[in-house]
Image (tube, rainbow, N blue to C red):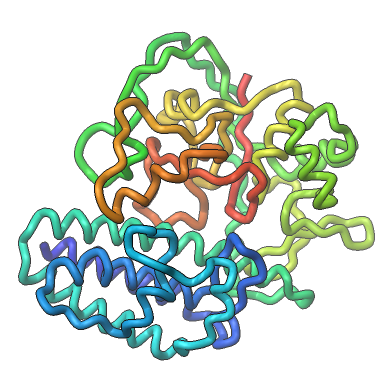
Length: 383
């Protein structure tokens, strides 16, 4: 259990480290409904350990604050009422200092539990909690960036912390032969339930790009009036472009005929050779259509993954988020983790520069609504 304790403590410390550059005023704002304030991420990831583990494994456990179950539950219907998601930024109390006290309180109880209880079910839940917190670490970073982007002074989160400054290490196309491929998680180690149900998929011959689309390539699409021509867009995507007056990727800004991009180290001149980031599925699909190409399916992506360099961007696929064969939703609150979101969302594969190290794997199925682009998303083309 010592390695589990070390992993738990390391993960919890990393969340705190992400918040270290923040000012107290940064912990609360929530300008959009799909992103949450740092104070909420700190609290919710702690609530998960208290609600899912401490209440279950410690007889007569005393919760830190009886109101926190309501304030920091996210979407778990099984566990009762919760604060309205769009109003998380209005929760000025508890104060940030009390939230850190809450984390310390729960951390101490979990650490003691790990050292004194060898129950395998406990270990599995703690590992789930660790992976849950790692997901929130990525969200914490991307939510912070989105909130900071509303500030016209382009604040710097931290120097030398530009997560979108990568370049491709490979070029060209990878050919994948027609055949039957095994898809889904297999073996030992942690995985989410939506990766289960390893199954065979027949794939036709295809080619997949070894490189992700760059800023320079996407600028060509913009200069060719790609955002103004409906024929490249899905109908729903075209409506999204028009209704929201979308003209470029998220965080791009044109100043005196030059393109800039907001990053976590401030506003930077756009570098053409850098890999494109913060793109919606609608934009990814439109760009691919303009190029006369397409996006890979999630099955094609997984079949090719061992021969690709991935991990700089979450890569949109042309696969709806659906259950694998024999997928079953687990009993209780844990069953609400993935299954109930299998509607109106698209699958992304890979990982991003905001993904905690060790959290990525080729069978990982991320998923978002096609309009969202505040995650560090990119485009890999196929044909």
